[in-house]
Image 1 (cartoon, rainbow over the protein chains, first blue to last red):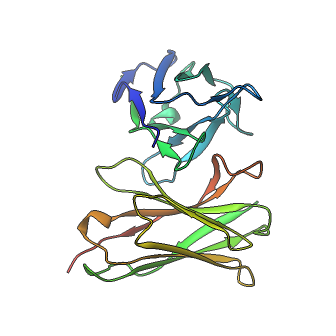
Image 2: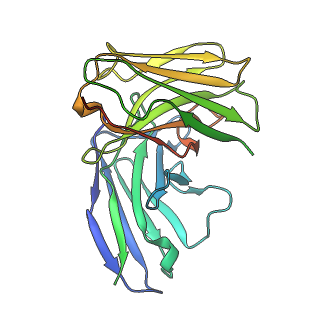
Image 3: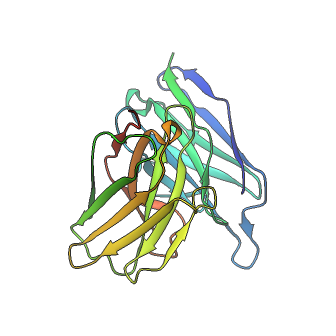
Length: 113
Length: 119
C-alpha cells in the first residue's frame, strides 16, 4: 500500500494569515502518460464527514473558495490556505488515488491562534 | 444533488456481523463506484471496499477475508457486511461516491454512522 504522511500533525494560525499543510507519499503518484497527480485533499469539520476540496493535486472542487489551493508533484504535495477564516478550523486529509487500496494521510488539525 | 445516508444497528457484539446499508437519493447509481470508508478514533480514514451498479466489487486486502459489499439498484442502495467483528472494528462508517471519471477520489459522503463493537 502507498503510505501517506502529513506534516505537521497540528498547527495554529492567526485569522487572515496563510498556512500550508504538507503531504508525502511513499511512492510516486504522478502518471506520466497524462501528467496527472493522483492526489486529493479533504476537509473534515467536527461531527461532519470529509468534504472534497481538491483533486488531481491542484483542481479545486466546485464551490470551494479560491483561498484553498493545492500544489506539488510526484511524492510531495502541499495544501495552502490563504486569508484564514474561522470556518477553516478542521482536520485536513490527503488521499492518494494512484493505486488500490486508496489510502489517506493521518490528518492535520488546523486551529485558530 | 446526490445524497447518501447510512443506516444500521447502533451496536454490534464481538464475533458477530456488522451490517450497514447506504441509501442513495437524488441521482442514479449507474456510472459510479460506491465505497465504504471507516474512521476510528485512533486510526486514519480507511477505505474498506467498493461496488458499482453492475455488482463489480473491490476490497481492501487488509479486510478482504471478512468483507462483502452488495448492491440493490431497484432500491438505490448498497450494503456492507463485515463478519467476525472485534473491538478494533469500532468506527464511524461512511458510504461515499467515487468520482465519475474513474472512481479515484470521493466527491460525496454520507453523514456517517458510529458502530461500537462491544458486549
